[in-house]
Structures are given as C-alpha cells and as structure tokens.
Length: 376
Ligand code: MTE
Ligand code: MO
Image (cartoon, rainbow, N blue to C red):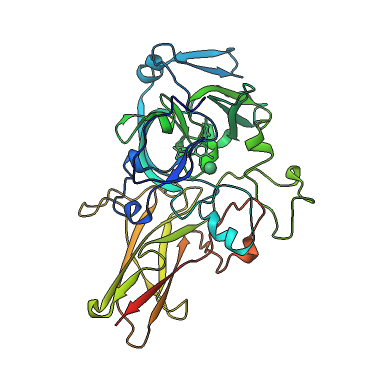
C-alpha cells in the first residue's frame, strides 16, 4: 500500500477521500482562528505523501543561464534571507458540492472549507537573471503515481520574479517545519493563486518557454461554460486557472441549524477572500434570502489582537473573517442567511450556481446560503 507511510491526521477533519488523503475542517472551527492551525488546515493530496529525508533533500532549478542549480535544504535556509507572508490557500474545487446539487460534476465533493490561512516562511523567488525567452515557471513535486509521474504545475514567470508577487519557496508553515501533508520540507507558496499551483514536496523548478505539461496544468483545473459537457469539452480551449475569483462563505451557523426564539439574536460568521492580491472591502449579509442586507464587521487578525498594517495595494493575500449579530426577525420561522463579498476591483460573487456551473465543478463562488430554523 503506497499510502501506508502517510502521516496521522487530526480526528476533527471531514474526510473526502482517504487514499489519497483529502479532508477539510468543520466550518465552525475554520472561523475560530485567523491563522488556521496546521493540523486542521485543509489537505488536498493527489498521490501518496512522499517520505523525504531532509539531509539528502535537493532542489534542482533548471533553465537559468548558469545551468542547473542544486540547493540542499541547508543552503536554501542559510544562503537567502527568510521572508514571511500570511496567505490563504484555496482549492479550485472549494464549494464543489453546491455545483453537484445543480447537476452532477466530476471531482471530490468539497464543502465550504477547502480553504485555509497560514503564515509561510521561506526564500523569496524574485531574483535576477531570468532568461528573456522564458514565460513560465514549472514546479515538480516529489510525489509520484505508480508509473513514476510526479505532480506538477506552472505559474507565469512574471508572478514568480516580481518581488511584489511574494512567491515563496517555503520551508515553514505557522512558524514550524512544513508538516508532511503540506509539503515537507519545501513547497511553493504562490499567494493569490489557486491551490493547485502551490506545489508541495518541491523537487524541481524549471524556468521555461512553456507551461507545465502535467495533466493538472493541461487537462484539469480549467473553467468551462455551463453548456460544455464531457463529449464536447476541449481542454486546450481554456486557460489554466491561476488567480481565483472573489469568494465568501458562512461558517456559523451551519445549514439546518436550529436557533431558539428566546435567544433573540443570531450571530453569523464566515470568511471572505479574493485572488490576485485583491483585498476584500465589504461583506454583505442577508437574513431573508437576499431581500435586505447589512454590512458585516471584518477582521484581519486573531480575535482580540490589533490588526497589523494593512497590506500594500495588490498584495492582500490573506482572507478576512467577518461577523454580524442581528435581532431575529419577529415573524420568521426560518432564516435564509446569505453572504456575498466585494473586492477592491468591485468584483462581486454571482447570486446563483447555474450560470457558473461547469463540468469539473471548479470556481464555485455563488452567494453562500444557509437555512436556519427558529424554534419557538
Ligand atoms: N503538490 C503536490 N506535489 N501534490 C499535490 O497533490 N495538490 C495541490 C497543491 N499542491 C498537490 C500539490 C492542490 S490541488 C491544492 S488545493 C493544494 O496543494 C493543497 O494544499 P494543502 O494540502 O497544503 O492544503
Ligand atoms: Mo486543489
């Protein structure tokens, strides 16, 4: 069993698939902390977790003018200054289950928690000397399938070399060595970019004229029209997902929860985030299915702590947690709670799923709705 050496996992995780291991935290745990503890950070593995020995670990970098560059973990840690960023990672398939409710899609049935936020430490990728003919930076993982094919993906070169892109070759997550499930000993952190390009267990970097030829770059993680089906889909016709669209969801209460009339108020909590470093500037919350709205309170730090300086424009990599406490409407027996976020480009979420439905169930970012019963 190639999965027999996979690490132990936190029992609170909701498991979507055991081998490979795919799991998300319960939503109400997610909004408890601005920085998601690594143990409950969502886990998305396509393959077995590779066993990497830190003493013999090597990172190979190809396509630079000087030929192949090989770095040990020690060299990566000591030869370059350490950068630290707080960035949210979201899987392209987050909230796929809502697409499944419209019409069956192909993929893991993620709820709303295939998204988490961590502090990452490592070497910045922006340096000198990138060749003029290069347009992409490919990443290869050390995780392999039975045929020896490794996980791979690529990002545009300009994202990787721009210091304001904040791309990291990260060896720390939340102040500690990156845990095995999250890419020990080194992973690419590409803030603002879909989870799939944040390659874990990084073995090789290739500076190239071409995108990664991997299955996950070419024939997966792309968006299509609701009218495209598996008979007509042409993966070459769509660009690989890089930056993700505006997103928000309600973590508390959960769908189907019951609130007591005597409590008189309801507190709604959730997260909001946008790709490409765009900052969330507002979250609107409705208790009546979208007829009336109020603006949520947002925070960008742990509860009770002062927020740090706001991020420079275009570098808002971390999510915001938000909260609203409102009186229970007198007449209602049921609430349909809805949230929607707005980023600093005034991008907003679509109100329903059908116009954005796609056969792979990616980019699911419609207004999030939960129904709550009021018990008299
Ligand atoms: N990197 C490797 N080597 N193998 C993988 O299976 N999964 C990708 C990405 N990097 C993957 C990978 C996907 S699809 C996502 S969403 C993120 O890792 C998930 O990162 P996490 O498990 O740390 O949350
Ligand atoms: Mo993903």
